[in-house]
Length: 103
Image 1 (tube, rainbow, N blue to C red):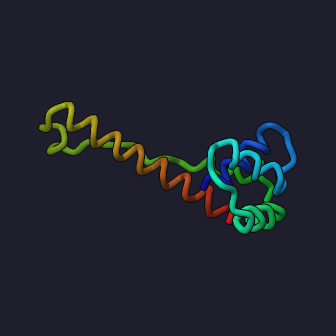
Image 2: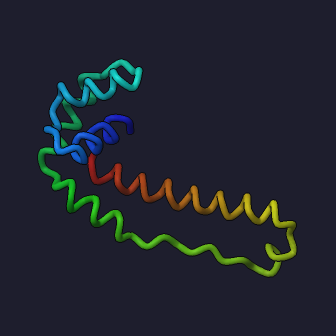
């Protein structure tokens, strides 16, 4: 996942997404770059328009959180925890969808 983030950072900054730049970001984050993963990422991204991929991900609707009568009877702290869990799950699904786009 960190390799995709590195590519997104480079893209956002307008820098070339290549093996050397991705490795620098991974190293700067305190991890040891895996050249095989970097090469696979670069190869996968050569066929992807990142701007289009990001637009399609940002237009994915996120399910709204609704409460049932049993949920309304629970204390507010439990409600908040459940809502946060649902939001986190929706965000994780969106991230997984983005990861699938990049290989």
